[in-house]
Length: 193
Ligand SMILES: [Zn+2]
Image (cartoon, rainbow, N blue to C red; front, side, top):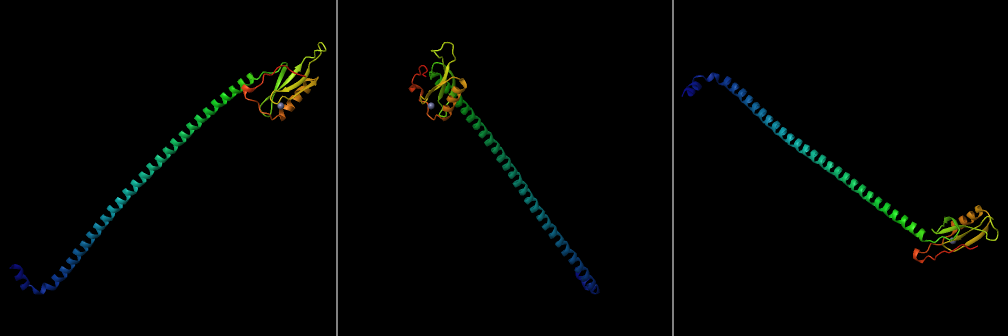
């Protein structure tokens, strides 16, 4: 009732009142806009925070993945190293076995009488350098020669050991005959001239 009476009794103030209303409405609108902007900014901030967290998570995962890959690589390298060491041990063992077998093989080879030196042939056999006493001439120096225990080639008649050694060595460096298996080796007996 009072409001009706006021509007009725104060019509001249209507223009002023309208302007004030407009200003108020304006302010309210701006306030609303500002609130909306603030809300939007908050939403953006929340989105950004979420994105940042996701990025950080990805970075952590990538880092963990990288660390795992590095660990795996180390493990593989260690494994490869261990395998190589194993293989080296096996090779060393086989080499030792081979040396032993060769030694046994050499021991099984009967060397001719008067053998003073041996030469390894190209084919892996032996040439025996022989110093055979000259039975015709007492106290005379021996006669030198060689016998190839692999191909059977022989030579004799050198009166200086240097010549006998050279002959034996020359034959050894060219003889390609392969030593027979140990069980088939003929027993070498005495030197011949
Ligand atoms: Zn030979």
